[in-house]
Every structure is written in C-alpha cells, then in structure tokens.
Image 1 (cartoon, rainbow, N blue to C red):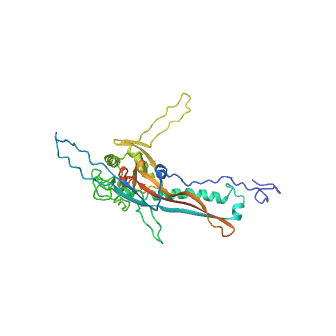
Image 2: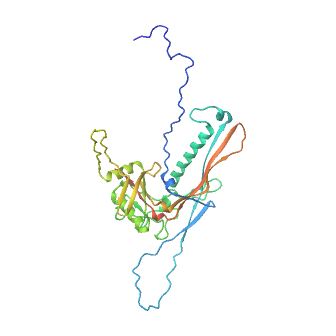
Image 3: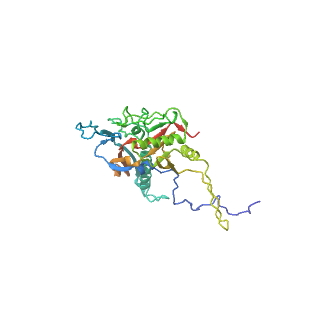
Length: 337
C-alpha cells in the first residue's frame, strides 16, 4: 500500500479548522441527598439554640375512686441545645482578557467558574453534614465548625441507643443518646466510636429501626456507601424478575437484583447510595427532625477591584439543627463481607 506522489494529506496541512465541542463534559457527581432532604431554616447568630423535650413513659395510671392525693408530678424541663454556623466559601478571579476571550463551551469564564464552585460548595456541605465531627466555637485563627449528624446521635453508651454497633450482637447493640440518660439526648459534642467492623446483617437494620420506633422516630431513608448499598441488596437474596417477551420477541428479559425500597416491621425505607457517607456506616434518616439553618444563604459577592480582573466570592454560612437526633439512627462498624 502506497500513497501517490504529491498527494496532499492532512498531516502537514495548514489552516485546518479546530473541531472543539461547544459542550464541557463534567463527570463529577453532584448528588447531595442529605442536604436536599433536610429542611431549610434560618438563624440570627453564629451560635443558634433550640429546645427538645419528650413525654414521660406510658403507664397504666390507675387511680383510686375518691382519691384526694393528687400531688403534681415532677416537671422535666426541656433540653436546650446549640450548634454553630460555619462559613464555607470559594473565590473566583478572572482577568479582564480571560473573561473577554471567546471560550468554547461557555459564554463567560467567570460565570462558568462561579457555577462550578457553587456545586463544589454544596458537595462540601454534604460531606460536613454527614461527618462524625463535633461543633467548635472557633477563634481568631480557628474557623467555626458545625457539628455533623453523628455527634447528634451520640456515643455508644446505653442499651436504648440509636447507634447499633456492628461488632456487638444485634441483641445488645446499643443506641446512644450522648449521656447517661436517654431523655437528655446527644448535644453535638461527642463523636461515635465505630469499633471493629462486622458483616452487615438484616438484624442490625431491624434493630436500628426498632430503636427509632421506640423513640418516636419514623426514618424514611437509609444513606449508604456504595459497598453497603450492594450488601443490602444481597441480604434480600437474588430476586430475578422476568419481563416476558411479547409476540414478536422485541422486549428483552430483565434481571433485577437490587433493593431500592426496604419494608421492615417498623417502617418503609428508601435505600439511597451516598458518595459522601462515612465508610462502614448506614444512616437512617427521619428528615422531619433535621434542618440546615442559614445565617447567610448562598450568595455571590463581588470583591473590591484592584486591577484588570474580576474577583467574586460564592459563600454560605450554615449550621445543622438536630431537632431531635433520637428520631434517626445509625448502624456503624459494618462491612459488606
């Protein structure tokens, strides 16, 4: 095979137009299930506070006819809880020339970068909210920190805790309220210890749901890392559904081997894979008892112009409000195999 003499090819040609797609393909995931599912509130200070309470345990409460001994019961005061609003921001600075140049895939380099940074901050918030970290007041050289979900579920200390420890028998797996008294509940100052990982079982999932039921919570969602999402599907066994071919045989047979909705004795759960979930852990969420409170909601601020460039800031100041952490639960220290 040979090319005829003086045949012109593209290899040395000058002036060929560049074929650059006008679309920018970004594979980075943007899902933020907890941030999207939790309520949205507001706060008026960097330290915001709220109160929680609970009813006395149910009793048979039989009284004597004509009883004149009607002393008032001891009053259990509501519990006062606090968290801090933390600042998250990202800055974008673009020269006047760079913003004027005709880039492929975007009309304005500055606007494109701002939109990209806003998505990144949402992912940062998701990671922070799902963290096993405590609140911090901050100082001149230390940033304030909002307490993540796990510090509102608490440490493992009580047989009625809503943290189920994988390395313990599910019968004695403990749910924690962060103190010696289940009534007091967690306060955002203690992280959970996961212990040695054990293989996830359906008994652990049922125990976590039972604890929430006992506390009055009704979780509707499990947030799971990818490996544990697959493990939950495996716990349900291999469920294969055949879609029968029509007369022409045009429809293929589909095998379904995944559990996306789990019905337990204590409620129905949607199983949602989360890229920002703590490893070796499942989070059972009752979103009615969680909100992200904003001191400053998402906003764009244009900073002082000091030269031939534009500098802008995407910023949010927010904190997690655990209206009652005992309504949710976690199974920790677990693995898929």
